[in-house]
Length: 299
Image 1 (tube, rainbow, N blue to C red):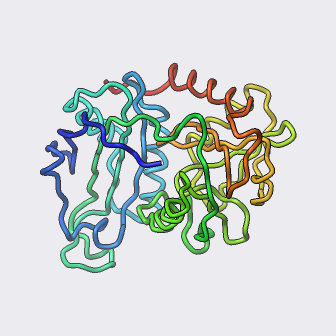
Image 2 (cartoon, rainbow, N blue to C red):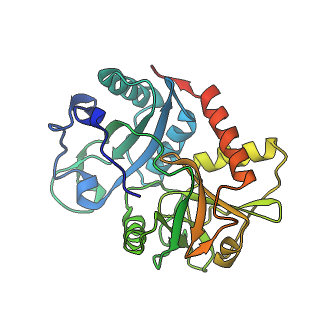
């Protein structure tokens, strides 16, 4: 799976610190904390028909992450929303848009990891691109990565930070294996998530998803759990081993970038009959209905 360039994004206008500029002229200082040490937090949003899905939840997670990293100043939700609206307006965007928010600690007076070196900030970057959900809705194939998700005593996954090297290393393994993405285990050997999404399985008529002990508490994941509850689908949030996913009747992934997509194979094992299962198809339909009728108006 390789994302293709969308010609509509060639002349994007992006917002850097509230300043709107063409993508080719956008820049940040080499002294910015994100450059110096990945010292930043981020969120991915989706725009459907002029509305952003679960905007309040995304901004709350961004704020919690920045607070956990002891950012001295955090823009208000209103300030962030205003910059999002300005970026969308500058690009004339109303639908099928993925928005990447990055909030860095800001600029340092000299290079170094110490946050006391920061003299300005934080810096908010709003990048909005035309981007359909990135996964093939007929199904994706996964392999299991050798790279583990860290436990909270190493690097708390509740902080939605920009240190994405474990995910990148796992994605490299998936690329080499010819798979779409990689399953990542936690330090105990239980399934955590993939390099980019949360995982669900269906086995014996029951829905299940790993705990968020070693991964972020996904916003799309929470929406799917709520949809399943409303639909009367029992769901277990628990520790699941890799073999339970290998032997599952159905597997699917969830995330802002890809929505809800079926998994048809893991490590060469065909899941079910190799096509999207009935529970997966039901939840895909319910999720499509949810995003079509809900969200925060921004354009």
